[in-house]
Amino acid sequence: MIRKLLIANRGEIACRVIKTARRLGIATVAVYSDADVNALHVKMADESIHVGPAPSKNSYLQGDRIIEAAKKLNVDAIHPGYGFLSENAAFANACAKNNVIFIGPPASSIEAMGSKSAAKTIMEKAGVPLVPGYHGDDQARDTLKAAADKMGYPVLLKAAAGGGGKGMRQVWSEDEFDEALAAAKREAMASFGDDIMLVEKYLTQPRHVEIQVFCDSKGDGVYLFERDCSVQRRHQKVIEEAPAPGMTEALRSTMGEAAIKAAQAIDYVGAGTVEFLLDADGSFYFMEMNTRLQVEHPVTELITGEDLVEWQIRIAEGNPLPKEQSTLSIRGHAFEARIYAEDPDNDFLPATGTLSLLQPPQEDTHVRVDTGVVEGDEVSVYYDPMIAKLVVWSENRDIALERLLKALREYHIDGVTTNIEFLYNVAANKAFRDAELVTTFIEKHQDSLF
Ligand code: ADP
Image 1 (spheres, helix red, strand yellow):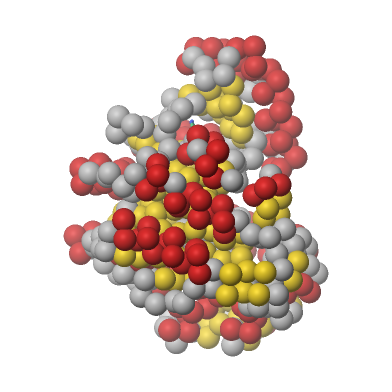
Image 2: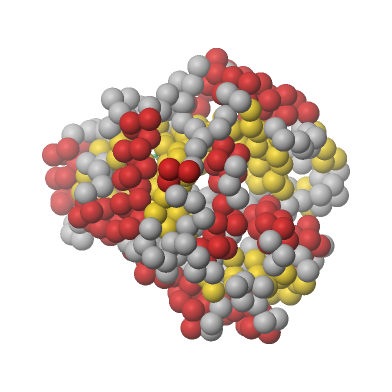
């Protein structure tokens, strides 16, 4: 039994985890940096402990210090949220060594998915469909180039260690290859300290459809259906929804089964997301597996009526899956819009400042706002500038979209530049209403979005 939980994170996700823990009667411990002394997640937790100065590498990424704090306060388990230490195999291992439950998969599963090339090798063996491409160890320029030439352009160069859309370059013809390779390697080295590259066929009009899976420690798995995250800017998600429009029952179960197979191939335990590209002809290809709770998990919660953090906690305690596949079903439609402090008119540059006015729409059964800030708080340069996740639910996609537009109109923030108007323009776009979703959506509709 988990009686006391430390949340090794900040902001909205720390607050989100605390809410479920509180409902389950589990005591909570927040960690905080110098910049977060008065933060909402600290106020919400039963106890809190300082872990270092503002920069995350000196505080929220200090695994040893966080484990020390957990031991000092007699914590049973650590929830890592997303980002920070959530996909850090060494941290998961250190938790186990110190008899603290890490709410996530075993370190070996994290490691297996840590490299996109190693992950593809495992998935290939497990029979999960892959984006055609090269993911070998031989990294010589000529080998990579020959692979690209052979599969035909356009190709996508991708950092094996990549994340957050970094270290990726499209190559449209042979003569762009060398320059793109150099740029992708440079960015990968700077961001991840590793410049191993994959070459993939670049799909020009795919959708990003991901499957939420859960496995328990006995190895049983279920899927909590899909999310469509095609609306992206520079490979970063902007608006997500569930279920994916136009999904047939047959494709849903084929993709769901493939996702479970992917998870079981790495002896997965807990919550995970298997990301696929879905082509117009219904072919789907494994991209990667995220071994943690995703930012966009609330849309899945709203259409299934399940609390994914509760599932994580139950499974981490060693319990079997809370539900069997046949008892899970989809009800209605949900959207999530990521409200950011950023300036869409200035290349989406992160914005900072004091939230002098913070007036979200009224929360009810149709509207949920996950946030980690209150009026008067500072949006600083230190952390991800997400202010909130606006999540809406309704009986069907059309009504849910109306709710989303209404909620965006009712969201008022002053003191910091935000992307609210941009999100509104995306949601109000006719092609979005018609669910013409592709990963190039924002590029394609540039002119009507700004
Ligand atoms: P990261 O880990 O950096 O987020 P992913 O591999 O998850 O990288 O890819 C991020 C996004 O890039 C995808 O959602 C998709 O929009 C795009 N993408 C990735 N691979 C391909 C591909 N082979 N063809 C077309 N688009 C791709």
